[in-house]
Image 1 (tube, rainbow, N blue to C red):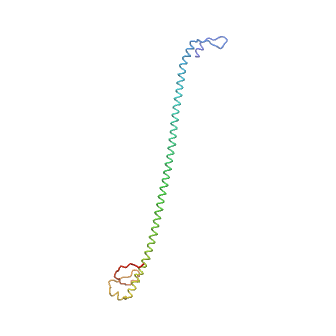
Image 2 (image 1 turned 135 degrees about the vertical axis):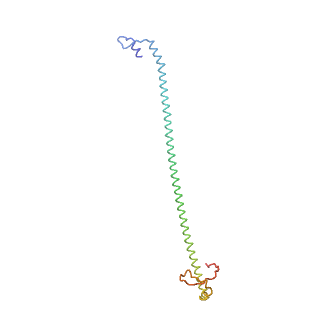
Image 3 (image 1 turned 45 degrees about the vertical axis):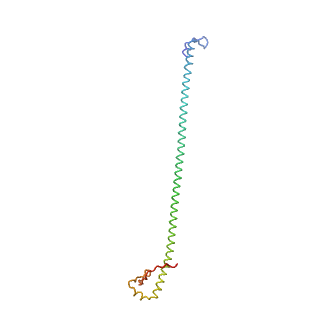
Length: 176
């Protein structure tokens, strides 16, 4: 276009130029054809760029959302695992405490039962000692020793080595 203007004639004493109309019209037609296609190409390029940017933004948003969701899942999993660990520790601790309580109760029961048994045995030994003393008092110590010399023994509780006669075994329930 600048070339057509430069080729045109200068109108004296003005800033106007006379150009060939036919050439200007052809140039304008070519511009009408080329410029809209260029503009359309530019618009297509801009639209394609906008589409690509929108897809990229959408993909980036999905990635960020997925990352955020996954981070929450991991935090929830960690929190769940921590709660599970705490609960399992609580169960183990309670089990240990219950077991210790039962052991202590069993020990207390055993001690009580053994003390009771000791008292019963003392009473039974006292009855046996009384029975022996009574029997020895009726028979006499020399007669009891001479009748059964093979059955003499030391009394286990006395520790003094006294010889006593073993009476024939009879089964009697102790008086309680």
